[in-house]
Amino acid sequence: MSDGELAFDEQDLLPAVAQDADTGEVVMLAYVSEAALERSRETGYAHYYSRSRDELWKKGGTSGHTQEIEEIRMDCDGDAILYLIDQEGGACHTGYRSCFHRTVDGEVVGEQVFDPDDVYE
Amino acid sequence: MSDGELAFDEQDLLPAVAQDADTGEVVMLAYVSEAALERSRETGYAHYYSRSRDELWKKGGTSGHTQEIEEIRMDCDGDAILYLIDQEGGACHTGYRSCFHRTVDGEVVGEQVFDPDDVYE
Picture 1 (cartoon, rainbow over the protein chains, first blue to last red):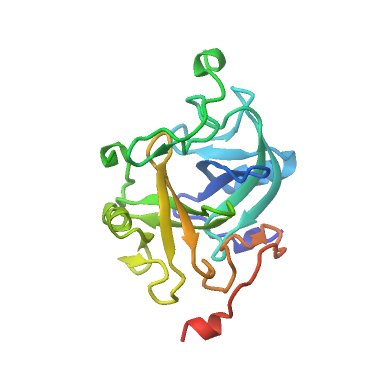
Picture 2 (cartoon, rainbow over the protein chains, first blue to last red):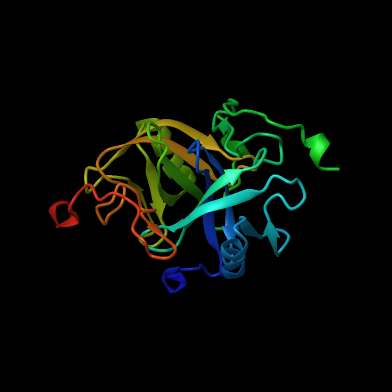
């Protein structure tokens, strides 16, 4: 383990990109604390740190749309990580497979895979 | 254009993930200012904002390893963007195709495609 090479920012966080290991689709970007990263490694499921709720969370803990981890990579200067994952259901709380389901012009390019009203009460 | 939906952070930046449009490989994560994003849209080549040098830069401006843009996506809450690009050469200054060429355990999993000594003088 080379966690010593990771360069956490002033908030002790790193941006983490989650990519579907099979399809290559980038499904979300969130942040990890050192504890969230450790939890991901220990459990084999992606954990993040919520900046708005100020807490460590397991992706899919509420929705069941978990991310089983295949591999965790770091970038060259250790200030970003990449989770290669198997996405259960959809990553986005809006029901899309990926949070990146729109162009910056607002055109929808992604696939909606669940109805959020059925998942979040 | 829906730039009004983008949620730039306190430093007026957004994290930007660059993904090879053909292979799906995630090649780097950097940051964009509003001006960098505009420059990318105007020129068709990926631009970023360097937090360490405090300046807008064109990827490949020195190395020639440019990123021609196929599409720019934003995530659901507008606080991250995804550049789908055609990567010339390698994205990483270390000569690898991707900056994410190591696992967090330090194992090299990526492909070195150029010798940095030949590119950066």
